[in-house]
Amino acid sequence: MATLIRRLAGFSTLPFISAILPFVAIPIVGRASGEDGWVAFNVGQAVGTYAAAVGYVGWNALGTPMVAVETSGRARHELYGRSFYARLPIIAVVAVGAAIIGALLAPGATVGVAVTFAIAGALGGFGVSWYAVGVSSISIIVWFEIVPRAIATAIAIGLLLWTGDVVWYGVAMIVAAVAGVLAFHLVHLRRFFPRWVGWRRVRSDIQGLRSAWGVEVVGNLYSNAPVPIVAATSSPAASASYGSSDRIYRYGLLGVVAMGNALQGWALEARGHHRRSRNLASIGIMLALGLVGFAFLVFLGVPASQLIFGQELAADPAMLFWLGVSYIAISTSTPLIRNVLLPARREGAVLWVTTASAILGLSGMLVGGIAFGPVGVAAGLALSEVFTLLCCVWYSRRTGLAEPLTSEAASR
Image 1 (cartoon, helix red, strand yellow):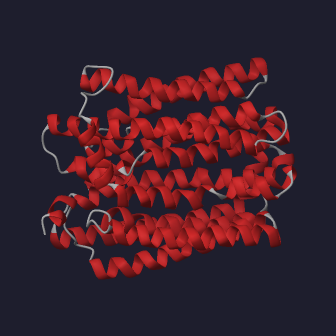
Image 2 (cartoon, rainbow, N blue to C red; image 1 turned 60 degrees about the vertical axis):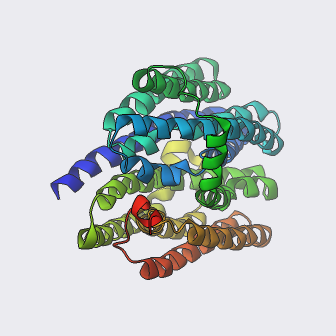
């Protein structure tokens, strides 16, 4: 129990702080940007977040358990180097694509806002949290994610208050993303870039992680699609309201990610029946978190959005209800995917489920958006997330909660 409490205090709180720091400036963004600028900001972040998921090339899903089972620092550094060079060309391509999509969806004269935040989001694919969790190093998260973002956020707030131009906030986030990863390289690898691993190794890693990569690509497609779909099918006013609802929802998802990080290492370090017990505890904790998040969104989401973004950008209660349903499903399915199915190398099953959910979700969002507006889009997202949860429960029962670690499963 003491180990769990330490992990929750470190690997849940610190990644949460790292992720939420840039949002300290959001109340200023909401009031300074206006309706069109707020839509562009949310579109840019949604597109950029998806680009980062593509840019991870599956390392965000399988990298943590792969690093965790290595015992030497040299082997871990080599794994990180492989991940960096697998991600580098992909991130370069998706960052350009994200900028173009953001520009096409941004309303009026707010193209610069959407483009800068799309690029900043895409550069998140260079993040090191997955590696820090694998090596159980809280300091990596503090110095190379929290500190750069804190400095950039402070500078961005000053620039926002001085110029009233939201673009500077996006520029600051771009600088923070690049500075953080380069500083990590200098401190831990003693060089600006990891040792070159060769194109054969890069191609082999991409090929070997294709199922996990597919899970990230497809899963994040439908989870980040609502804001662009609403922007393309609804009025700026409706898009702004959905953007606020989605923003409150994603604040909560930061807690799911952080708690999932903390529980993953705690569950995977155990063996046999101890693994099963910890997996059951993890599932129970994440279900409870999901219920708390649902209650917050339904009962406090609207006043929270009014306080943070302003009355004119308030969230919609019907949208928040369906986003709350999605929150429960995502929170509960997270330990099933990360602690049971992926460590057991069931990426194929997860990819199948994720693909089916994406088809169901995108179809539901498009049909719902046309028929019912942004509320229909939120309901379509909830439908896909509930489907994912039910399928993960079924596959986890077949796999077993005491399945061996990745390296053990691969040798079977």
